[in-house]
Amino acid sequence: MLELYFTPDTCALASHIVLEDAGAEYRLHHIDFERSDQRSPDYLAVNPKGRVPTLVTPQGVLTETPAILVYIAQLYPARQLAPMDDPFEFARLQAFNSYLCSTLHVAHAHRMRGHRWADDPQAIAAMQRKAPEAVGASYAYIEDHAFVGPFVMGDQYTVADPYLFTLAQWMEADGVDPRKTPRIAAHREMLHSHESVQRALSAESA
Image 1 (cartoon, helix red, strand yellow):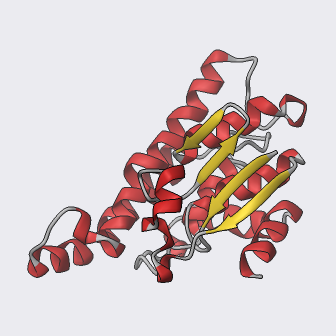
Image 2 (image 1 turned 45 degrees about the vertical axis):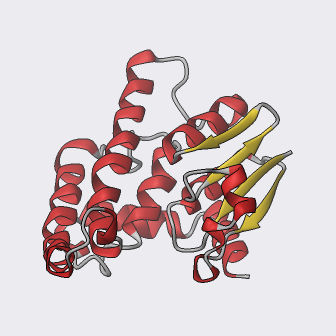
C-alpha cells in the first residue's frame, strides 16, 4: 500500500488528488506544521528534507511533487494521467511541472518562507514585497505560453492539472489578481468541482 505524508494547504494536495484520480489504495499521514511534526525524528527518518509531500512505496520513499505525480501516473497507466506513449508530450508535461516546482512555487515561498534565503528581517521583508510581482509573472507566462486549455496539456486531463490547481488556490494570498489570467482562473474553478479534488479536500479538512 502507498502512504502519503501531507500537510493541508500545501503542494501535497496535488499528489493526494492524483492518488484519488488513480483509484489507488493508500494511507494518509497528517504532518502538523504547527506542532513541528516535520522536524520530528520519526518524520525525518522517513524524509530527511523535513518537507511534504512524501510518498512511501513498496520500493522505497519518493519526494518532490513532479516525481510523485509521474510515479502514480506510471503505476496506474490505465487511468491515462500522463502521455506515456508520446516522448515529446511526456517531456512537455515534465517541463510544465518542473516550472511549477522550480519557479512558481519558489516565488510563492519567498512570501511565506523568506528565512530559507536570508536572516536579515529587512531582506525577508523585501522578498515579501517582491513576491506578488514574481508570482504574477509566473502565472502570466503560464497563461500566455504554457497553458493549452481546457486542461493544461489540451483536451486530456493529466497530473499537471491538479498541480496547477493546487498552486493557483494561493493566488489571492500571494497578491495576484486571478482576473489577469482568466484561463487559469477558469481552470481552477473547473477543477474544484472534480470528484477527486473534492474527496482530497474533504479528507484534508477532516
